[in-house]
Image 1 (tube, rainbow, N blue to C red):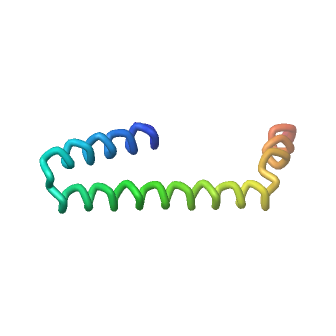
Image 2 (cartoon, rainbow, N blue to C red):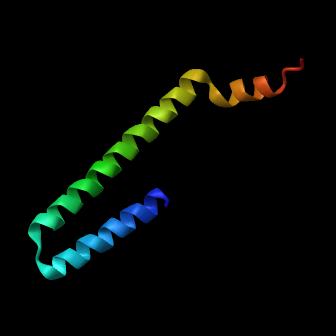
Image 3 (cartoon, rainbow, N blue to C red):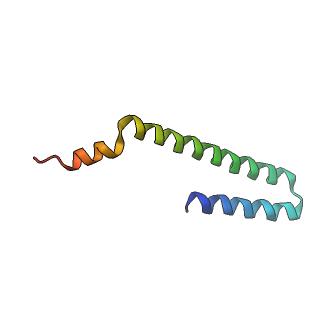
Length: 68
């Protein structure tokens, strides 16, 4: 399941819970969705910083050109 599919599934669950007026479950699902989005954004940002620091694309290219 992709990130987008997970968020869509959670959103659908939240909408279904809204119909039954189950506030506790709706709030918990909303918290989970928000926490996942925050975590994914932070990990994506961290990955980008690591790529920049390591000059990832050039490093991989250089490693691919090594002849042993």
